[in-house]
Length: 156
Image 1 (cartoon, rainbow, N blue to C red):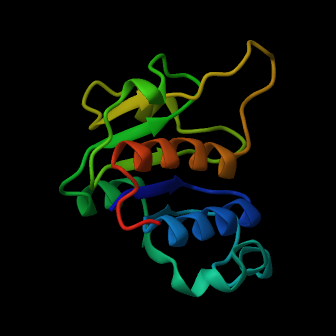
Image 2 (cartoon, rainbow, N blue to C red):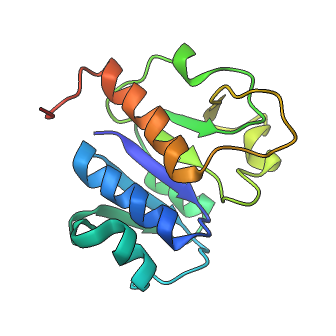
Image 3 (spheres, one colour):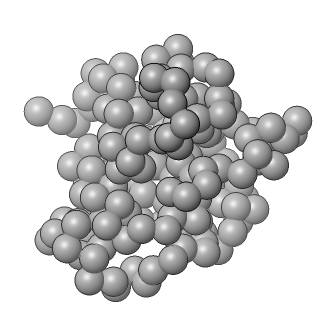
């Protein structure tokens, strides 16, 4: 099973969409507090449709709590500040792929910490002054590459 990790997500619609992708890909969704909405928010349920009740969801009170929870599996940080493309990684079952909040991404204090347990990866984009792709789209791009590498386990 792959693990999608959202660090302090801000937009309920994105989280709902990502939850739907998690359900349909057999992945677990991790949310790291604080987030800018409630889990019973109508927008999560609207985007996640009737899939939201089926999300394999783990909520962590902080990044440190998440790290204590995560015992096995490698951790990847998806960030525009990374130099390695997500296609340069060999994903394995049990891996965690973390994405930052929509407005600011994963903090540099996590990305570039010398003791960090993660590997930084990015999605290539044209050079522009714009920040990044939509969070839900970014999750799906990397998630489905990881699933492809794993030969789409338990999927038809």
